[in-house]
Length: 139
Image (tube, rainbow, N blue to C red; front, side, top):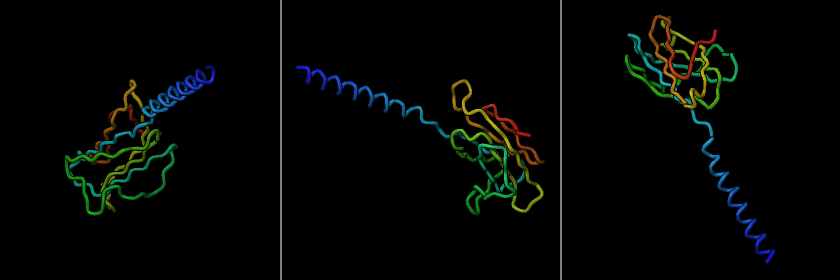
């Protein structure tokens, strides 16, 4: 009788453990949505996007637009940042053009308990406007 009670107890403990383990999967961090908008009067054919945990950046990064793709005037594209990256370096423009713009910014992963999207609008004239997730330029 004691062995049977012990087995039932072990099975119940195992079930509780498995249920708690499965429910904790919901706490896996989500990607952060970054919406890039071309608010300028020119097409953009080069966008560089680098995520990091510190305020460092190299001189040149790869184009995140597929070969031959462009971001038309007024068009937007959605990208996903890795969970909990604290700094983002963003570069808009045309390859080998003087009409380029770059920004290094930080953001809050959760705002009021929600994972808000970040919108970065390239306005041309060396200007990128950030909104959402308390995003702000790092100086």
